[in-house]
Length: 250
Image 1 (cartoon, helix red, strand yellow):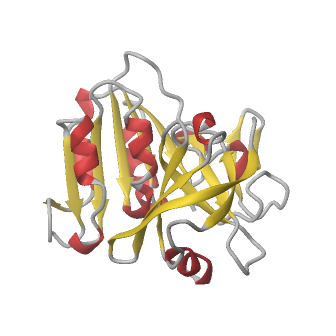
Image 2 (cartoon, rainbow, N blue to C red; image 1 turned 90 degrees about the vertical axis):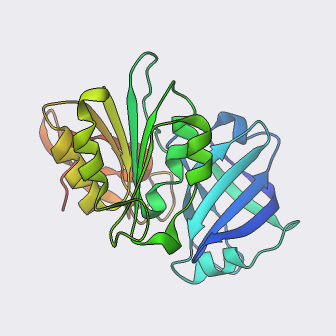
């Protein structure tokens, strides 16, 4: 895997939902290397550890990164201005394995929705199911509707779209798809994997706390199933995308 740390120029920083920010960063080298489902590690001014952020979209010379403010590091990021220089390590991890001719459904929950946009653009006629706690946290619906006419929205409280969970919609449309790619919180991934088991293949992208992003610090290790039994694998290096049946959902 080829990755590097380079300075990027921040072109845009916009709050697109409550506490959720949308960045566009520019660099002439690294964006063209990125694959759907991969992530980057951002050096935050005044902080030792970098912040891992999923790649929302990638162009020849720019990346789109959508993140939620969850601590001091992301708070600093949310306050940065266009024109600021940001050092970014990219691209990291293994993305979704997408094959031509398959009917894909992309299922996202909360801040697990952004990495699905770039991936969904790589296949023909994707189905997209997204879920949020409430209408104040909904993001990227217009972008998904530009690439698919099969976009479904759910909210836990029923304030927008279908009242319920992404798995409710997925179950209804399972016979229309060949494979699922999902990203979101562990309870959601566990439920999606259960719906798919024995019916369609499912890939899941795990959201784990990461330190280095390159497999050196072991912070993001999780228990997975291997041919030899069970093993602790590093999400940043062996993932973040796994086959759904490889993961212990704890």
